[in-house]
Structure formats: C-alpha cells, structure tokens
Length: 474
Ligand SMILES: C[S@@+](CC[C@H](N)C(=O)[O-])C[C@H]1O[C@@H](n2cnc3c(N)ncnc32)[C@H](O)[C@@H]1O
Image (cartoon, rainbow, N blue to C red; front, side, top):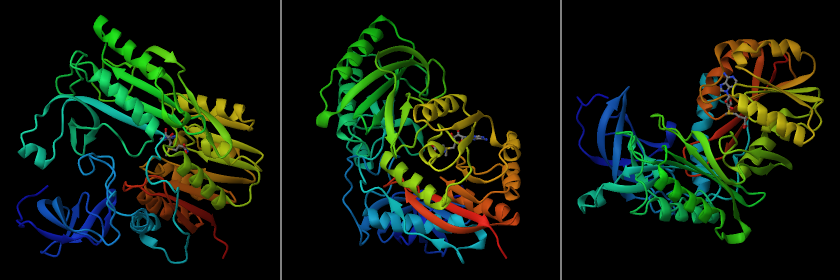
C-alpha cells in the first residue's frame, strides 16, 4: 500500500457498502475511500491509512453522526472483533445495502437489464442465529484505543475471536451475540476452567508453545443440543486433569430452555498451523449431533461442513427450489458438501447425483441420504476432474452448482456452458464469482433470468446470491 500521497484526517460521508462489508465514501481528493465498520448513511471521522489501486483505506476513529437507520450494537466487543461489521445498522437497512452490492457484483459486466430481481430474503432472527462458532485461545489480547491509553495489560490468558488483521491477538470475549444462550453458558464454563490461574497457559501462535488452542461449539436447534470441541497442544498429567474436570462440568451443565451439552470431543494438535483440527484424544458423551433442515435430518460431527445458520439455510434451500422450478429427472448437485441441497430438494426428482472434493463430506452425504430415504449417488473428486458426470447423467436433468468463493474452475464453466439441462441454478457465496462465470455460461447459450439475495449472515458483509439460468430461446 502506498503512503506517498498525503491526506489529513477528515469526516467521511459513507455512501454505500463495498466488497467485504466496508463502507465507501469519497475522499477530499475525489478518490473512493474504504473504511471498516462504517455504515452507509453515517458520517465517520477517519484517519487515511494508505492508498491501493486508486482506493484510499481509512481507519474510523469516531462516529460523527449515525446513519438514519442506526441501531445499538448488542455486542460488548463490537468494533474490535473481526466477526461482525454492521451491528450499528437496522437489519432492513443492512439487507438493502448488502443486496445492492451483491446484485452489482453478481450480474457482472452485462448488468441487471432483463433480469428479474426478487425481494431479498433472510431469517427473522438477526442475533443468536449461528449454529457453529469457533474461538481461539491466546496469551495476548487486542485492545481498543481507550484501553491502550488506560494502560490495560496486553499479556494474560484470553479466549475470543482474532482481531481483523491480527492473527496473534485475541479479542477477549465472554459472549458472542450471534449464538444463543446455551452455547454462551458453556463458553462461561470453559473460560472459568481454562483461563484459571492454575490452568495450563494458552497456545502462542508466535512461539508455538502453550496448551489451549481453539474452542468449537456446534448447535442443533432441532434437538437443543450443543457439541463442544476442545483443541489443545499435547497434554501432561496436570493438563489432562484440567481438561477432564472441564469436560465433566460441560456435560453436566444446566442450560436454559431445555438445551443440553451432547458431548465434548478433545482433539490434540501439535502442528504449527493455526487451525482447529487434531487427533481425537478423548470423548465425553456423544461425538456428534443431528440437525434438521426442511424436514430432513443431518448427522454432524465436529468438523463436518454444514451451513452455519439453520434458519437461513432453510430459506436458501427453498430459494434454490424456487429457482429449479418443476422437479423432473436427475438433480445434479455439484460441489455438494454433505449433500444437503440435493437431499432437502430431492422430492419429485428421480435421483440425486453429487460431486464433492472432501471424502469425509461425501461419507456424510451418503449416510444422510440413506437415513432420509433419498435415492442418491455421491462421488468424491474435483468437479473439474469429474466432468464425465455430465455425459453419464445425460437426459432430463437440473443442475445446481454451489462452488467455493473462487467460483467455477474454467474447465467446469466451459463444460457447463454447453451442457444440456432444463435449468442451471448457481448458488454464490461470492457474488463476484457468479458475475464472472455468467459470461462463460451465457457464451454457451444460457441466459441468467432471475436473481435472489439471501442474507445468511446478518451483521456481516456477506450476502448469498442464487442465480437461475435457462437455455436461451430466440
Ligand atoms: C460453498 S460449499 C457448498 C456445500 C454444500 N452445497 C452446502 O450447501 O452445504 C462448497 C463445497 O465445494 C467443495 N469443493 C471445493 N473445491 C471443489 C472442487 N474443485 N471440486 C469439488 N468440490 C469442491 C468444498 O469442499 C465445499 O464442500
């Protein structure tokens, strides 16, 4: 980032959202400026931090005047934690601004002309919606400006989210407002045991020493159960005693509204990579939970991929169903993960065929299909290496693609462009990828006819987009 150009701190009027959920306004030199945590409609005091590809990056130092649709953030560490950026805006305004950005990105260079844009959808609950959260332990905390000035110590024992751009500092968090009361109750128990003065110390991502590494909480709304995962370095006898006492306290915890802890899985990770993974050391209670989506049940182990908002996923999958229209023949579910799209939408189709890279996800998909009585075949592999599936499923079929953020591999886009099918539904977690892949698909004769935005993650910059393509009839 270049610092050559100079710009004094100034008051920025935030006009709209830009990529990543940052606020965008115009700097005094006429160039756009991007600022984290700057809601559209507000005026914020900013310190220019540098300049990259014609765009200023700024740091918000004060809120000068809130947006007209402003809201009081519920979270005590809002602004410090990397999880949420938009808690200061009412949910309707968040969705309006996020879908404006997502639609610009998803329609690509061809723009929105001729496309039916449907009303933005999203679950009612703007807080407590996540069914999974992962927190990191650390020996150094991230402080606010005011805490810095007040001389609050940085070193200690902490548990929370990483601060944006600071892999080595943890925003110490005793509650996450994006999950419900039951997981927050279990978080309090973990903090009490794991951060105690006589407990082993947290892992340091700098020195690669210490014990506690990550905490995972995964919830089943359907069964009101929480699965706890503890990730640590290799234990000595003392650490084993502390983990055992913690796990027993978690399993026995009394939680509100009929919730309970289904089990605690302890994983040991001695590698240096900062990931919540490891070898299973011990399990108290069960090592899995079961969640329901649109009437189908899915068995979830701690690391299985699953949409992180259950109510949001139901809305997303209903939207994919709307985009598919009339069900007939084979439903081809590419990038299928644990098979949840194909399994929930299987009704009316003769069979479901899925392709997915991760072998464990495919195992889950097969088990989930069998448990739900769905006729399905799931294959392990990269979609780009499994394109013969298009020849093998020729005939009446509907296509769903739900690729990772990078979008379709060029070989996949090329093959799909000329693939015969009634309809192709593109599910985009990164709307820009849909905007780019649209061009390749339309070159092969598809036409993008409809777009839906689905807000799976209130308070963050993410917006999921569903695009319906049909064969062009001239
Ligand atoms: C956005 S997720 C979609 C998961 C699933 N459709 C769902 O709704 O739960 C993308 C999936 O693509 C898988 N994936 C990533 N690259 C892939 C590739 N080249 N070929 C096949 N699957 C891939 C990931 O493992 C992940 O499960």
